[in-house]
Length: 168
Image (tube, rainbow, N blue to C red):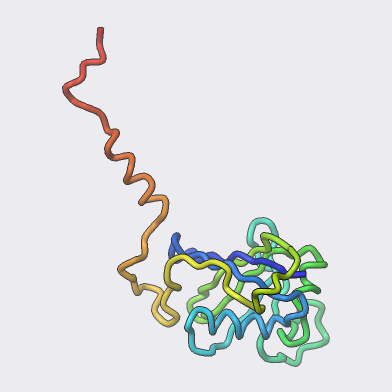
């Protein structure tokens, strides 16, 4: 089985990444794949399971925090597979890649299917727009923008004709 996830950013409305992974992949492996596919430098990051309103639930960290006495203690990414999370019906993840500025990506399971023998996994199945700058949340790329703004801009042609009298 292949799991297809969609990753979005609240910093760029055009940014989309769909990636396909094997369910046996650990969260640490997913972290490495995301960093590589975005062209980011390796960084300290966490995954969080999320509810339907994107509230953070359970944290998964790169390093073992050594706090095993608590039920809410972070779990090392290397100890958890994607299948373990999906089976638990946590189909949403938050990937926090910037701990200091609280910057994150929002990841949701969109499909499960049979693997295609022509592809190797993990893989990026679809991408749109460059990733936000890893270090500068205020950096604006020239090709960024909002899909909504672009679509609404097309309606500017229909603003009306001032010469038309709609009164009878």
